[in-house]
Amino acid sequence: MACRSGCCCGSGPINEDNARFLLLALFIIIYLLCGAAVFSALEQPMEREAKERWAQRFELFSQKYNLSKNDLNNFLRSYEEANVAGIRVDTIRPRWDFTGAFYFVGTVVSTIGFGMTTPATIGGKVFLMFYGLLGCAATILFFNLFLERVITVIAVVLKSCHERRHNKAVLPQNGRRASDGNRAGVNGGGKGADLAGWKPSVYCVMLILGVAAILVSCCASLMYSAAEGWGYLDSLYFCFVAFSTIGFGDMVSSQRVVYEGHATTAYRLGNFLFILTGVCCIYSLFNVISIVIKQVLNWLLRRLEAPCRCCLPRRGHHPHRHPRRNVVAPGHMRARRDPSIETDAINESETDTGRRMSGEMISMRDFLAANKVNLAIMQKQLSEMAIGHPRQSGSSSHQNGFSGGVGALGIMNNRLAETSVDR
Image 1: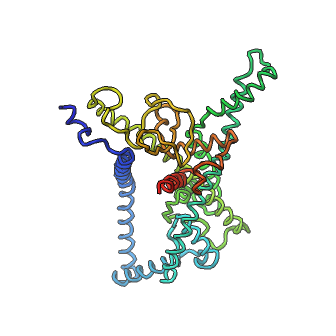
Image 2: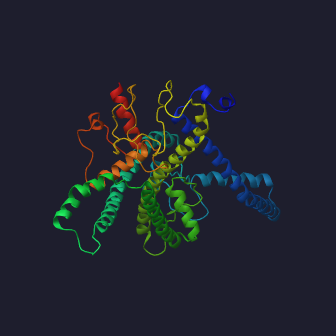
Image 3: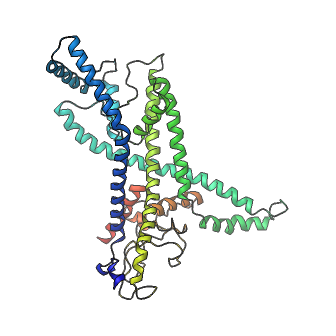
C-alpha cells in the first residue's frame, strides 16, 4: 500500500511522448530561469553604471547649453525615430536601395532578423507578412535538404574510415594480405555482412558538424575583424548570434558605404557566403544535438520509471497491461529482434492489437538504443549512403509520395505517410 501511494501506477501509465514533452518543458523552464539569473548577475551592474553616466552627461549638457530637460528629451525622441528609419550619426549605406533591400530580405527569410532595418509603410508591413510566410518555409526546407547532403558527405567519410579499419583487421599476423579466395570471401559476403552490421555513431556526426561550424565561424571572424574593426571575440560573438539566427542587431556586418581599398564588393559577397554557410552548419548541428537531448530525456524517463516497478506483481509483462505507445527501453532489456534499422514510414504491426510502431530501434547500447524517429532515420540514411544501398523505390514510404528525411523534415514525412494510409 505504501509503495502504491508513492508512484503513479494507480492512475495508469502516462504516454511516453507526453512524458517526454513535459520533461522537456520542465527542463526548458529551469534552463531559462538559470540563464536569467546568470545574465542578470553579469549585465545588471553594467546597466546601472551606464544609466548613471548618462544621467550625469545629460545634466551637464543641459546646463552647459542652457537647454530645458523637456526640450532636450523631445529632441532625443526625434532622433530615436530617425534612428529607427535608418538615419545614423555615422555614415552608412542606404537601407532601402536594391542592395540594402536584398540584405533585409535575406535576414527575413533566414529568420535572423537583425532589426536594423524594418518596414515603415503600411504596404511594406503587409507585404512582409506574406513574403516572410513563403520565404521562411522555403528556407527551412532548404536547410533540411542541406542537412541531408551534408549527411551524404559524412557517410562517405565514415565509410572510408570504417573500410580502412576493416581492411587492417583482416590482415594476417605476418603482414601479408589474405589469399585470393579469402579476400573474395571478405570482400563479398564478409564485407557486406560487416557493413550491414555497422551503424555510424551520431556522436561522430555531431563532432564533424561541430568542427565545421567552428571552422566557418573562426574564418568568418578573421574577415569581420579585418573589415569591420571589431575585436576577434566580438566577431565570434556576432558569428554565433547571426549563424544561430538569433540576430540581436547590436552588431551588424556590411553596413558601411565603402570599405578601405577596392574590396567592398568582395567583402559583401564573402559576408553573404559566410552567413549562408554558417546558418546551414549551425542548423544542422542543432538538429543533431536535439537528438542527443532526446536521448537524455529517454534515459531520465527510464530512471523515473524504475521505482514504479515495485507495483508489478512479478517481473515481466503484466497480464492486464497493454504495451505502451513509443515505449523506450535500454538495449539489454529489450527483446532481440532483427538487427535492421529499417525505418520506413509504414511498418508492419509488432503487437497483437495491430499498433503501428515507428520502426526498429538502433541497438547502440543503453544510452542510444532508446531513440525513435530522428536517430533511426539519420543512421539509416548514413548506413544506406555508406553501403551504397539506397532506399528502394518500391518502398511503402514512396507509394504515398513521402520520402525519408532528417530532423523535422524526417518526422513530418514519416507522420504524413502513416496518416495517409490510416485514412
